[in-house]
Amino acid sequence: MIFQHTIEQVLSGAKTQTRRCADEGDALRYSPATSTAVVGGFAQTLTHCVTEVINANGNRRWCVGGEYAVQPGRGKKGVGRIRITAIRLEHVHEIS
Image (cartoon, rainbow, N blue to C red; front, side):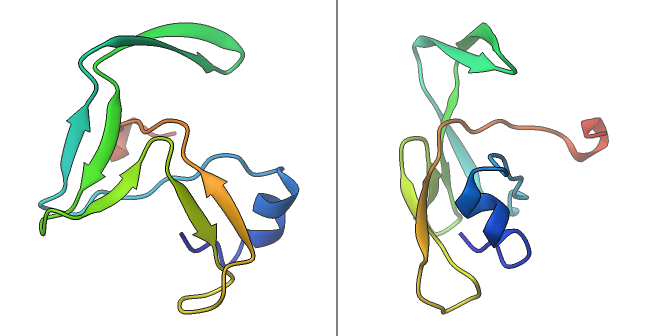
């Protein structure tokens, strides 16, 4: 994952969330079980949580629990690691 403009905030822990647009043809895999997540300081019961995003070629793009490199630019050496703790599906018109 590349965080060119926010790399310092990511590395310091000040930035803890990011949004990525799903591409046409991406598929979502859901967990069949119920789980609990802490969102905004409140525990919420979630059913059918998104656990993976798979691209049109069948390759995994993102996975809950997966670790990814923090890169200052495309093709540059990673300077840190992040772990995905949750994936949510949001429609663009619902984002304020």
